[in-house]
Image (cartoon, rainbow, N blue to C red):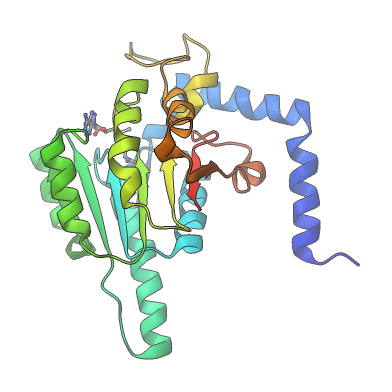
Length: 253
Ligand SMILES: C[S@@+](CC[C@H](N)C(=O)[O-])C[C@H]1O[C@@H](n2cnc3c(N)ncnc32)[C@H](O)[C@@H]1O
């Protein structure tokens, strides 16, 4: 008799091959994006701009890689920083209960525009001591150097990209932050699904769209010599079906 994980893999493969179900998932993405659904959720008191499925996605990536440091571009109101910090805190707490020693883990967040009220709320959060805020453009060399200095000699580093979603910006971010990613860890590129979105599905006018999206950047980056160490990993996406980060998980060999 197949065990649970074999059954689960079979369910996922069946669903992934199910064209009407995949279409229903794409229709949900489209309809929810048109209604700004991604803006209504929060994590531990901070607004988070994510689909609930992507919160599960992020949890699985962090659990798999067990990083010491997570670098995130695109903070907004801090929800994804607090999500990452909360999972890192749980990892460290579990290790402490098991071994009596606690690893200091942290999240480094970069945003070009950290509004004072958002900064104040993030800094007042119970997990604030695990969070370092860096203000500036994520592709500015001075900011990249600041992030590198903050990362220091961390053993395992995971990167999430969720800032400006144009191809050129994400391409520059990938080149700047990929060297920080340790073997076995990953870069998670959000909003790659823009590549497959309907042109008119965004409420407000945006500089990005199909052909000029985070996925365009991912594909161009993977074609570079420095992209050869990375490969797309669809194993979580195939189970989720609904994600804004289509083909967005790049694992470093
Ligand atoms: C989609 S929101 C981030 C959402 C957040 N990760 C969350 O899950 O709640 C995008 C953020 O990227 C920031 N941003 C835009 N351009 C940027 C740039 N050049 N460098 C860094 N951050 C940028 C915006 O200020 C905005 O706060």
